[in-house]
Structure formats: structure tokens, C-alpha cells
Length: 365
Length: 267
Image 1 (spheres, rainbow over the protein chains, first blue to last red):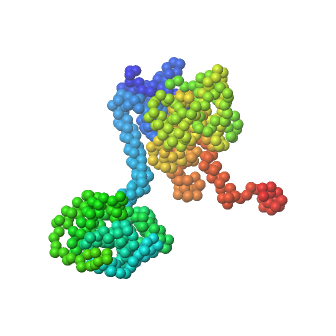
Image 2: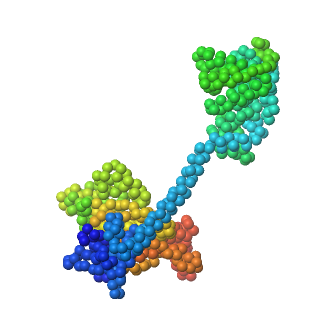
Image 3: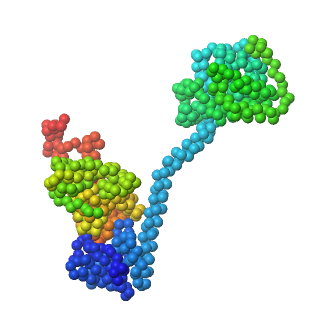
């Protein structure tokens, strides 16, 4: 009998309001025998008890019965005591006990479902942020595609004005004319109005600003041995401009907000000036470089200019041991991998190529 | 675990503090920042967690501290330990107007469920846990939120709440409808639920909100007459910066006009 005992708390008339601890055990008749630990270990019987779940979180098992006018409740302690109460119950009680278990389980299920829902709503902003960060590249690309050509040109003008302050730009003359000749072949069909400049600087470098501003440094003109080599570099730079790489870089560094304001109107000049400043300090990513290589190559092929020059030029720059690497290489990390790729691609191409007939660098060619 | 038996005395009427007497070697835990004064021999020690399980290892302590964060209490509990050779006293003050109520946990079966910041101090050995309200409706509209505090042990605990704290005993099956937010603590045998006020008209114009909290016996419950948030609302509403009326409440004809001109000492 004693191992069937389960502990709980008895509430009823003549008992302190907070109840007293008591033990109980089922009898085969379906009657509950309750022992209270007071002086005489008085015993009470619960005739025809009814079972409900109750108490905080419906976690308690309430066994209540009527004794004349008085109402009694025995609340079985949670955990093991409840389990023992349920397993030792006589068959006629089982139905009610199962009902209580179902009720308790239902509450638990609802709580878990509610908790999951709540957690979802709390985590939703976080999720959105993660999604946004994961898709930042494509969102940036999408925004960049929306920036109108006129704005791009405006940005190019500002950048040009800034460049003029830093270096002497030549707009006319035989060198510029030669570059323009090659360049116009490479940029055929572009929406931009290209402007070509030569900067009087010794570095082997060239850059293309948004809106079709291409600046070639004197050092590059001197380093290029054939017009095809120059064309290779120009094709690469033009590809950067046409693919709007600098705008993408700007979006990354300025933040999407500024780029979006540029794409959808609401622009002030400060946005442009700020953007232009950032552009001068810009470095392209490796992916952008690879993309520019591929696109530049396509442009060379489309213009029927031999891409061998591009390969040769890069090879020579990479192999030349200098105290400081040429600027073109430091800003365009021409890794062996990129060069390898270029060689493979070019090897697969076959002419006929039209040789370029232009004079460059004080008629070196 | 052996609980420390503590003697106490509550002072004051509306803004109370409780003075606890500690025998040599005894200790009490207090909510951080409620200590008012302590005598010489009492050593104050700050422990991470709730101070009940000192030997549970790092993870146990971390879990205890996490629970305390959830219930809106500070990460640390302060333990006041009598290191002297004579009885010493330490006092804990209630943080806002209201009553302090002592509850002997053994009398109610060892567990008390209470509002999440109503704990003031306790004998060392009482563990402070959280009790998740699993009834979604009650959690949302019952006025106490989803997280309540569970005080376990067999020592004395002191809880505090706003206004007058009222202890009631509910007989088996007896149900009391309570304004949401007024429930401070109850025995775990008590059913805590909500009930719609009944009529749309009452819900909108009755001023009692959409739901009542219902407490069904058997067991003891503790109610507060003035939840702090309600008091704070009234104070903010009548603050001059929030567009409230200035101090004098007298009638316009009486001291209103003249008093406003002559009797104002706050200008």
C-alpha cells in the first residue's frame, strides 16, 4: 500500500488556507484514501472524486470531491507523484485521468507553438537583415543598374575636374588622337560619350571614370611597345567603365542610401562630390578584375584587334623586376592565375586580326 | 539544503523596510540595491546567480544568472553574511511605496509564484527561478507577462508590491476576478487565468481593459492595490511638463485666482 502513496496538498474546511501536505493512495473501489501527517495520522476518504488539471500552468492534478456541503481538493505534486497517481489508479478512474493528461499536453503544445511564433516574429528583423547582407551584392548591382547615364556622366565630369587639379591632362595632340582611334573601336555602340586624355605622369597606369572619361598615363604610353598592347589595357579599362564597376564600388563604400538617392532622384551636388572623392581612392575587387578581363577581351575580338598585345603587356609588366611594382599592377592585381586564364582564352581565339595603324609616343612604332 | 531561519521586523507604514536579524553564521540574500543599512559584523558578498547553489559549477551559475536577467533582475545577488559572534541586523528597503509581506515558504508547500520584480530579500538557500506562463492568453492579457518568478525553498521570503498588499485565501473552487496587474503572488495550486469583461461596452468604457485576471482556489493569493505602473502613469499625467495641472487643487472661486497670484511659492 505504501509504495502506492503519492504526495500532494490537501485543501478543505478546517484546514489552513494554504493547505497541508498529505499522502494519498487509490483503493480498488475508485475511492481515494488520504492520510494527513497530523497527530493522529487522520485518514479521509474521497468518494467519487473528479479529476481536473489546475493550478499554475494547469500543471497540477486536482482531485476534488464533495463531502456533504464541504468541498475538498487534493492536489497531487507535479512530476513523479503525478505519474505514480496515474499509474496506480484503478481502471474506472483512468478515463478521467487521461482527460487530464490530454489537457496538460494541449497546453504544453499551444505554449510551444506560441513560443515558436513569437520567436519567429522576434527573429524576423534579424532574418531580414541577414537576407539583406547575403544579397547585398545583387541589391547593389540592381541599384547600380538604375543609376541613369546622365548622372554617371555628371560624376565623370566631377572626377575629371578633380583629376585636373592633381595632374596635367592633355586633351589634344597625336597621342590623344591615337588613343581615341583605338578607343572608339573598342567602345562602338556605347551609350556614353567617351573622352580620352593623356596625363603627364611617369606611372604605368590608366583609369576609366564613370561616364566615359578615360585617362592614360604617359608612363603607360612609353611602356607599351605596340598599339595592340595599349589597346589591351584600354579594353580592360573601358570594360570597367561599361560594367559600372566603379559605381558598384561606390555603392559599397558610400552605402546603398547615397546610391539609391542617385538612382531615384533626390540628389544634391554634395552626394556627387563625395562620390567622386571616393572614386579616386577606389580599388576593384578580384571578381571585378576578372570580369573586366573577360569583357575587355570580347571588346578586342569584336573590334578585330589582336588580343596577343594584352597578354604580352601583362606578361612584361609582371616579369619586370622593379623596385616598386607599376601602378597598373598594384591597382590591378594581375595574379598568375589571371594571366593564365587570359593566355588560355587567347590561345583559343584565331584571327584574322586587323593590325592597328596608329602612331604613338613620339612615333615610336 | 539547510535554510537559515531568520527573525525580522518590518518598519514604516506605506514606505516600508524590513530589518532582518541574522544569527552568527546565518545569511540572507537581497535584490541588488535594496540594502538600507547593516551592522558591523555583516559581510556583504556579491555572487553571480542567485546564491542558492554555490557548488553547481560555472554552467549552473551562468544559467541562474540568465534566469535572473529574464525576470528583469540584476545579474548578481548580494549575500549578507553574519561573520560576527553576536546577532547582527541588516535592513532592506522597498524601492517604492507599498507593503512588504513576509511569506514562510514551508507554510505554503515550498513554492511561491510571484510577479517578476516583487522579490525583496530572503533567507539564504531560497532559490530564485523563473516560471513561464504557459497559457498564452494569460501571458498576453493577464497583466503579469509570460515570465514570472518562482521562489523555491523552505525559508522566509519577503516580497514587495505597490499600495496595500492583501493576502487572501481562496477555498477550493472559489474564483476571484482581479484587475490585471494587481496579482502579486500566489500558491502554485491556484489557477491563474483570464476572462473577457463580458460586454463590449464595458470593455471600451469600463476602464478595466478587455480582460480580468481570474484566480481560482484553493490556495493563498496576494494582491496589490496600486501597481507601480499605474502610480507612475498618474504622476506623469499630472506632471506640468506633460501638460498636467499645476499644484493647487483648490476651486477657482476660492483660492484659485487669488491663490494663484498671491500664494504661489513655486514661481
